[in-house]
Length: 74
Image 1 (cartoon, rainbow, N blue to C red):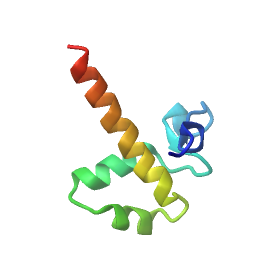
Image 2: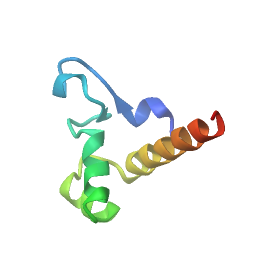
Image 3: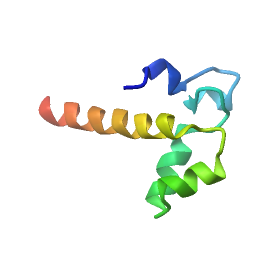
């Protein structure tokens, strides 16, 4: 599993503090917008080549884990 610190980070000087993929200025939200719009992970990665496949997959896994954890706490 990839280290969470290698996936995303926030900094007030980068996109107003919105989470971005480490080493890029690509907002994590962009990944979810692409998927919501019916695009594939490969299409997202083609449009944002600075994002590593491992980072994108890890972000999706973190989101899933967060939702599952919240569901179990209800």
